[in-house]
Length: 516
Image (cartoon, rainbow, N blue to C red):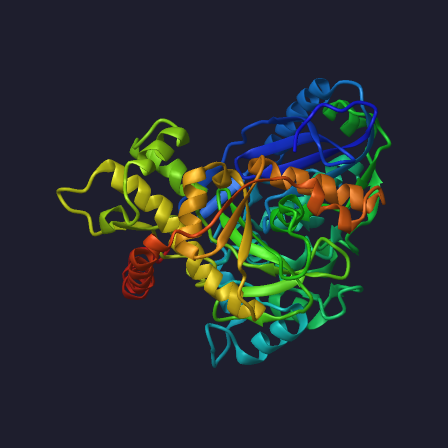
């Protein structure tokens, strides 16, 4: 919820997304008093590269912070907390300076390096069985063979940029880099480090690096940050950071989290087996569970959550909202998302049986395949632009259904209702399409694009002991609930079956076309 409240203690929350940061001043009650955003360039390179400049991140965060603080007016700031795009890598030197552009979650250039590390003379699903067994037993998952996890990023940097590797003191996740800029302190939390797949997560209250996994991956423990528990105060805002952000120095800074972790709190679905659907640039279906487990065939695992003592379902779709951006910016189908929503309204469910596969940057779950690509299928001379736009909305939803099957199997139960957050949840049309395609209730959270920054604020307030976990659901407003339309069920069942078949029948073609 948003509103204007004065005299209440507030926190400054930072959400560093791929498109740029959102910074908000949030009250103890969860009201967003003010927020601001700034864009950040994305550098896509040949061979699967995807990079962003950490200095661009900080400049954008600083500008957005100053605007948000000015708009909020006189408030009592009591702390700062961050969330950020997860599964990225920033090499920093002894002075805390970034040595190159960050290798972010979309980057697959480390795929050959991780395959060498993960494989052996005998392979199961691309892994040496002995290594896979230890990864699953110790971490709850295993590094993806697409090369998009930090372990692969580090191996890629070591091979491609040996001078940078030699000068690197610590490799940091984006959120841990932000905390370094805020406090001058180097650390990572149990949850932020999890995607490196080199920590022993069996005791959720005492996570640490595993010597055998470090040996197998070749990661240098000396170049990895020390670990702290979620909900820890890791330091205070330095004078330099305070001047950049326009806030008082000395404010406590809490452990940050990846965007998947913070979205749980921004969705309000914080209890075990409560789940949310996130659609931003990427997408996922996630929530807390009371167990450590992995499903290697679908690339779903439970890992340390941003809440002490809990595990989190981890999975990801590479491109979701990015598909609409691609329509707008690359194909010129519409000038705005509002225009696309109107085009969707003009087309019946099923889009004339035009199918769109949304794998514009490969896929992670329920298949780990960095070479597969997006496509329109079943086009004819009578196909309209409106049908193609709706097919993209439906293609993303069909992909969500594919993932939901894997997540429900992982959770061991049907998930009847999902909180919907992220920029995609601003679309009433997409909310109803997801309800129809998934056959599940969809709860559209109010101000869904602010879910992650609200989640960062809630996590900060929890760490500062200003709220209790039981307070969280009431802090998140549900705008509207969408229920499946039975009239559309048969059509979407047919399209879903063919959607999965398309992957099975075309993956070999894409592998041959996109072998780097």
